[in-house]
Length: 117
Picture 1: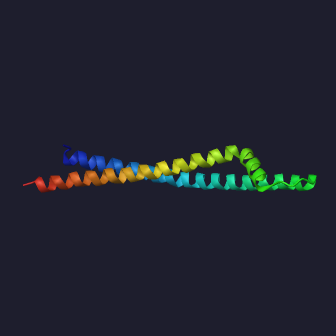
Picture 2 (picture 1 turned 180 degrees about the vertical axis):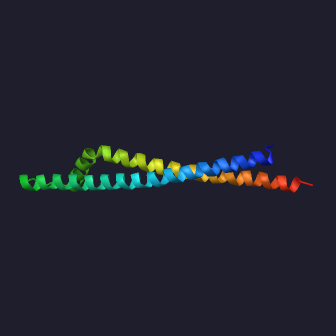
């Protein structure tokens, strides 16, 4: 069992870790929003390009063909969007786990208080 001093140190360390995670979350949120915007704008531009080329050449481009072409052309942006979304989720889970750890440490600290004479 941890001593009260060890519990206090662990809580302080975990709180510092949470502060770092929150800063990482802030940055990851920005990166994810940027990746989402890059993907959506790139996808839309590519769809427009394909449809315009079809119109200029006199051949009709159906929606599925335009979407498929845009998907292939924006593969890297889509991949980046998935990675940033996953990073954001992972950081949120890490913050939740950190909060849970602090609650466990607080429970341990409370048990020490009840054991004191």
